[in-house]
Image (cartoon, rainbow, N blue to C red; front, side, top):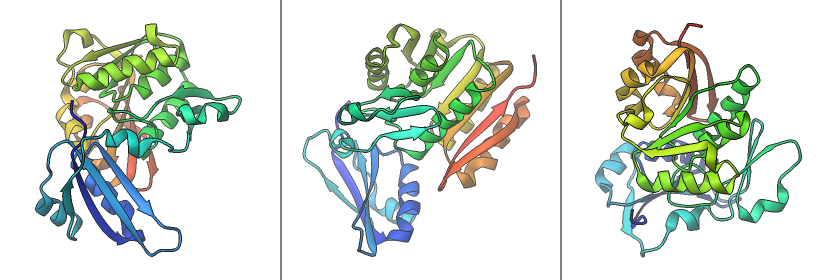
Length: 282
């Protein structure tokens, strides 16, 4: 997978920056960044892409002119994420090498370096999933766990650390799968995280029923995969869905209710949401 070579950027009022960032997230960029100066009224939102995005479409999406320009051949994801502060989400503390000496006592540490896969813990949806995972662990154990669309493997690693047992992880991107394996080894759970390249749940390696499935992807794939995900849930299983905006909650839930799932709770951070559904049963 080649590093991103295109940058879309827009400067607008700080009060609109979060909404613009959320809108650009829907176009599946490699990363979205917000640059702010403390005493200035404006902020610049940048989205990095592997392929040239449609500037006209992005401008219509935001309601303001978006500039698209090529970038030098560098690992811009890594450069943009280096130096980010650690993230505390539930019992988890997600950090990079530069924060290795800052891990507080009493947390579950996960070291994730900036790289070419999504999921360093800094995006709201990843932190929402970690906090939800931490809450679920207070009530029960899950014997069979799947991190669907694993990115860096952060959620799979978190589950493996929580329950000290094997966890499945899958992603359509082989680079993400390799990153997940490397991160699992670096966090001392290499033998517990079984990462595979798969589109949805089609791979024979993912066959079977799960007690917990986590899918932090986008609303579109979540709706498309609803029948397959629902079928893969064992009786009494829990499903955590994220990567969606708050206004997409009802839409996503509507694809799962016909398959017998019940919405149990939701967690929000700004425009982003994580949903917890359950299949009734033993």
